[in-house]
Image 1 (cartoon, helix red, strand yellow):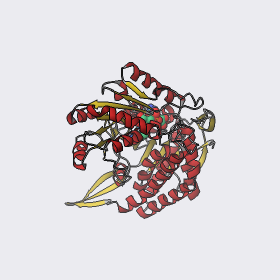
Image 2: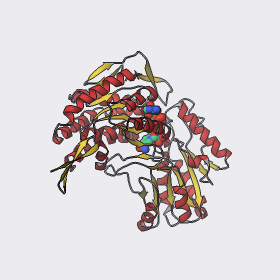
Image 3: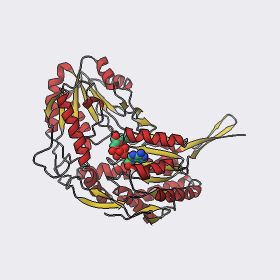
Image 4: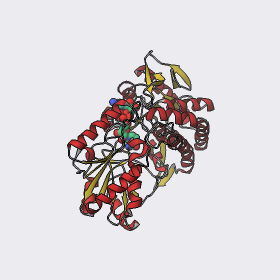
Length: 470
Ligand code: NAD
């Protein structure tokens, strides 16, 4: 799976330097691929190609762009097993989940953007004005490692559909699916300069993309720390930014909720992809009087989530993506113990899995919302059960977070759950088991970000408005 070139201007291009990045398998701790470590020169060439590509791509008819996206999705479909295998290695995602959620789902979303742009209303008469939605230009995309193809597609799908061209830098730890996207684009003969990919570090390649005067907009998914830096570099160039950052989402289990359904759903949500999910419900708020019941139900559900080799078909939770990630998560677990939270499951490295970046799925109870494990994004399989005394208390604690990405509510009636959901300062809330909807906009309040991705409304981020008076 090794790639030795970047992809821009419709061709595979030699890197300006000879340095490379090793891609490490999270289960074996061994290197299993390499990609080039690019430089600002590579970025410059890729951005120039994207600018040239924009001239014709932005003027192409909507139907033609839609058809290109459908062709791209079809070419990606043939690569599903390879993508899933790569991401199982890179991220540690169990292969079955990787196949469906890390490969098939984002590929479906590429195709959905064809439908969205066909149905978009791009012109509107307002008084004596014709208001036109035009593509914003060249978009610099920088993505994280946890759902690597999904996050790239969340930007490239609507961006290309809207008529923008893109330069993408994938995460160092999980770059391979981006290269497969380039292979697919090349195979279908996607016009030159439309999709450009340069791999490398955030500080060098990422910042060069963000700062490049030829880039009109930056779409970033990743940590709050990098998001802050990107927003300030982009601000210098007065560029639009779309930021999809971290989360510390709360799941409120109301006192009349069916615990036998709600608690397992909360555990599954928190532990998905071994907790390496930005929208994970890492705080479970339960009525104080029913905390013991919630702990028992949570432990019973956790016991069903087998930890192991991502390539074993019985595995539900694989290792974490890197040694660094594992150590960060273990550090938070130690902090939780020190701060006086009650450890009710897990709490360390599993003794039977000596190789691989494994952490036991962990549950703390009696957590106070002020503890580090309740305030900071851990990005690993750690659930904090937080007792509350009243519904108002639960809502206040849910909102007492720097983040506002996602959340959940389970109540005895949909009406009560909806009423609580409306009081949560967060970009999405699932009530009484509501499922993820690829038509609904996704994004954060507060420090979880700026802008929205996913669904037809995501297109709006990639347009700007022109008013023509007549
Ligand atoms: P990260 O911020 O370390 O890196 C993300 C990307 O940004 C990488 O490609 C990295 O190389 C690049 N980067 C880092 N510093 C940069 C800089 N100064 N300039 C330009 N690029 C830079 O994040 P990560 O560890 O890869 O991902 C985990 C984080 O992503 C978590 O905080 C998670 O919540 C967040 N995330 C958010 C969403 C969402 O939709 N809101 C989705 C997935 C992940």
